[in-house]
Amino acid sequence: MSKRFYITTAIDYVNGQPHLGHAYEKVITDVIARGRRSLGQEVFFLTGLDEHGQKVQQAAVAAGKTPQAYCDELAVIWKAFAAKLELTNDEFVRTTQPRHKAVVQAILSRLYAEGHFYKAAYRGFYSTREETFLTDKDRQADGTFHPDWGEVVELEEENYYFRLKDHQQWLIDYMESNPTFVQPTARRNEVLGFLKNNELEDLCITRPAARLNWGIPLPFDADYVTYVWFDALSNYISIPAALGDPGVPDALHVSPGTVGPPPSLWPADIHVVGKDIVKFHAVYWPIMLKAMGAKLPRQVLVHGWWQKDGQRMSKSTGNVVDPVAVIDEWGADAFRFYVLRELDIGADGNWTEGGFRARYAAELANGLGNLVNRSLSMLKRYRQGSVPTVSRELAAEAEKIIAETRALLEKSELQGALKAIWGLVTRANQYVDQTAPFKLAKDPLKAQRLDEALYNLAEVCRILAVLLWPFLPETAGRIYRQLGLAGAPDRFSDAQWGGMKAGHVIGTPEALFPKKEG
Ligand code: MSP
Image 1 (cartoon, rainbow, N blue to C red):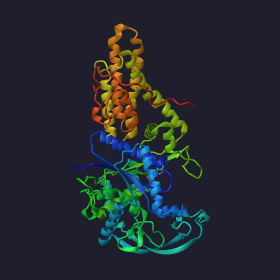
Image 2: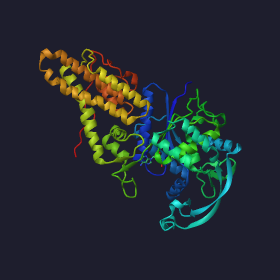
Image 3: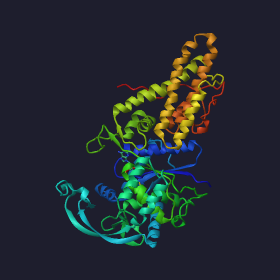
Image 4: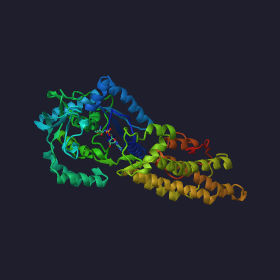
């Protein structure tokens, strides 16, 4: 079986509500996944939840629930969120699932047996209220710790450490010879610069079970659980391992696998993550994989962070964008369009209500919506909805944009692809103005010219549906239905001029993006 294109998102902390940042990352990943499927690749898209750790344990206690019951309730909300965003994930991982825990324990056993871990004491300042060690970064300007931390005591604790240091030069060499391992390039340079200028510290991978028991127990020392990152990062390989993927080292095949031939997934093609967690993905994770004897992912694709109205989003100040509310009011595609069109992957963004409304009005309602609506309405009015003979007037321009879109999708340049596609929207709207079918319709001698114009417009609408499907799946489907075409516009190869056949009768035109007042 050939290897599938395997793409993942970060797994979100289960405590707290899904917000714009989570939604953005999942949408980017979904577009890349859909784009690859449309291009004919077999894809496996994984997303999910990070459910262990102190914060979850505390939140569960505060809510009077067991941590598992607490996670189970929240997981329902997060899964519904994925559906709301129209994600096409193939699996949804939860780090409390037995299939994940078994693989994490297998990884821990293997690395322990091969001498990658050691136990050592750590001495530091500990906040008893927050149950966490503080560092110098947590100190206030006068050197003291903020009273919010409660009592801070100096404490010594033994933990297990993973030998990262030994692999530092290897990782530098790997990144030098694989320039697209971390993308965009600015992020790659940051990671390389960090690796070249700092000595890596070994990674603490445990917490004493006496202090934190909401975690996966170490298979070789019952007094400890593994600390969140070791657990969380492993999700990317635990699911392939649990499914029996032959690309995963044999030692990690601890569950029975699935019925039927196991999918071939590992190594991952792209891990999509936010800029705050690059170090975990571009430094710790490759070293963990090397120690496991597994191949490295092909790429860590790093996106920027969203603010709202120029401020960090924060629940305490109420400065948040609730993607669910936006989708309920405007539709999933309007949300997807705004975030994808507004930000190039890597850059930081700023959500403003005005910016959102402006793009909705200009690009969706007046741009795409108007084009499709007037093209199909005129075809309906002047030719009873029956497609005229094939004409190739806009074919060359459309084909150029199709080729550009394909190349940009292959490079995960989603904003660039949308810009290219809107080049066709704008061109076709101009074409309506230039050919003025409403004038041609008044002159029987111009019937052939009217046929040409109507054909070109209908065909552009069909091609736009195919190009847009990864980005705006619902809208693309609606354009197809209004064109009277069966199935989904989910095959890029259908973006070829001439697909609309003469005599085909279209469906009923209706507004794709209703104009909103206010
Ligand atoms: N659980 C860890 C990730 C483990 S991956 C093995 C985590 N969770 S998180 O819920 O805090 O963040 C999940 C993702 O959302 C991260 O990639 C993070 O960068 C992203 N975002 C969180 N807030 C964001 C914005 N304001 N803007 C864009 N993305 C942001 O970290």
